[in-house]
Amino acid sequence: MLDVIRFDFDPTIAPFGLTVRVETLALAAVVFVVLVLAALGAGRMRSRSQANPDGSAKDAVRLRRDDLILIAFGAVPGAVVGGRVDYGLVHYDYFSVDPSRLLDPGQGGLALSLAVVLGTVTALAVARLLAAPISRWLHVASVPMLVGLGLGKLAMVLGADGQGQFSGAGWATAYLRSGPWQSANASDPALASQALEGSLILLAAVAILVVPFVLRPRLRRWRMVVRPGLAPRREWRLLSGYRRFLTALGLWSVARFAAAFTWRDALVAGPLRAEQVVLLFVFAACAVIFAVGGLWEWRRARAAKRAAGRAGQAPGGADLPEPRTGIAADPR
Image 1 (cartoon, rainbow, N blue to C red):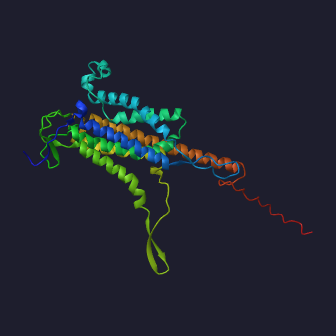
Image 2: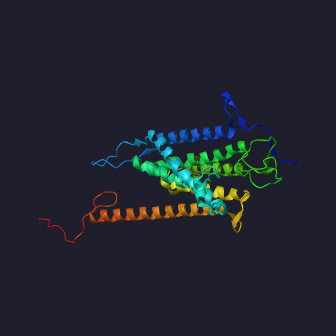
């Protein structure tokens, strides 16, 4: 056999007489890790409420961790519907003959791209019903989402799920045992597309966490001594609030788009596969939402500035100086 990575293990185990796939157990562990990370982030993320009437700030309020489970369950119906629609688009030739096949769960499966998008939409709908701060929840969920998607792809290696094109490259994988495996002809060396995609997604998560700190180191001069230091923390526009989630979603779509060039799927638009076309729309949607949100915030800040000017106050709340008339007061 070619010099490739060879796996020789049984993809199933039988605890208590029940046959369970190792990949399924790994995915369950990934879901648990994601929920724990989101819960930790919710505990650290403080929401800033409006100021008191006297001008002092109210006490910071932590995000409610008990809302997390409801929001997570709220993502399930959207993920199922979106995943099924995405799968139908990827295999359009098959489902176009009889669209009712999409309603039969026994035919085919789910795809990931629209599952993530519509799952996010239904989760936000639940958060809206709970009167939860949506922008702050999106901030918290950005990194756990990337970690879950990345680890989930790596877990697929345990079931030979998502194998790429057949190849004799050094990072190709082959499964020696008979399975059952999720990909066809798993014993033939094929590119580990799922591992590539998972690694790229985890790199995106690390970038979101590390980049703000990498840009902070400074060299400060004290008298004749130069010493290292850190610049004050600042809110990066791309990495705060709902914009952080959009950035994470955009990076995920780019990572998945790049990994898709190694898939076995048929080409539908030049060098692109159907899932890559869907990802282009996902990335464009993130860019449009980001631009519209930025425009709305700019108009809102401009309106507030005008209102403060009409009220005779500076934007910070201080009274504007009295206009000078040029007439001096009578010294008598």
